Length: 409
Image (cartoon, rainbow, N blue to C red; front, side, top):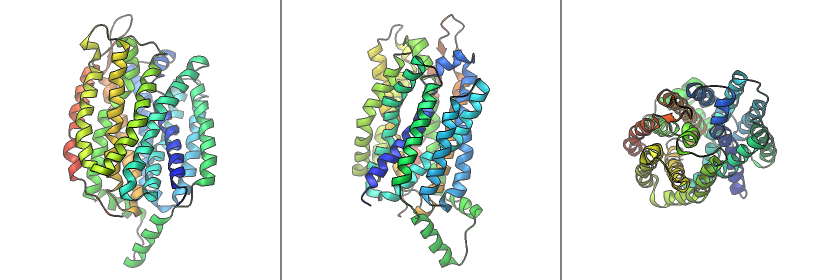
């Protein structure tokens, strides 16, 4: 396919809007907590509702996604995601905002699964690390371009503006996708061939049970759960922690995402190439332990010194961004090879569902541990406890990864 790299970047753009939609809440967290007069526990609910609804959508996607043309499903889901995100800008209070975030999460939660499924269909296994690295750049661009732009719009206008921007951008990407993404039906053809050979037409329930009965699939889902649970216990509270404990201003928060994301623009494709060259398992065993150091440094900054220079804090957050996102590249590459082509979208949707469940639980757990100090500046306390717990949870991934086998297409 001549245009497959253009399609890959188009998929990365769609993934960019989804990730920015998830991440935009983070730099706006302090502003939203003050605007809606909510505590960290209620803010954690705001974060987790997106993930919880995405979890439900992922379960439904695991049953239905492989029944249809990848193009058709992608265009349908992405259209509703864009509309729901745009609708968030019209919320008049916390509860309406909570509802619209849930709807956006329901449709947005499937986008990542579809993007990975389409990319896996377009690229053979030996090229897949590079492809996943490019898709993971969406996180980087969301940090470098999306988050500062969203925060700038919120500061210059109001908190509604970032969601309006995302809604319009999603509509533009949808129009380009409608023109260029081709019909992708190889998974349907493979399934029909198997059904014809066996003389039995597989039901949706049987298809889901086939996935759940696969030890390889279960291990892959467990790997995702542990990685996401550890990651999202940290991320939602970076902004209030940096503002209240380290001394960042709201405008300086953009530097965290701009610099951190800027580095990952270069490191994500590089790590993807190393995954193709040295293997996903070897790279995972190198990157994951380094990410533990980043987590420990980030969550203990306030204990290291009473006065942390901004450049030191930014170095630590950048370190966290590079290896926090970097460890997902070998993991995602291995996951795309853990299941056959005919069940790939269903598995990726189920994997996305587990990812969202991990994200929701992580936000809730973090919300119960993290507290506000009873002081005028309301510093964040117990963030270091969250960091240590996240490391302990993610450590189990080192033992799960080697048990996942690669399945040939």
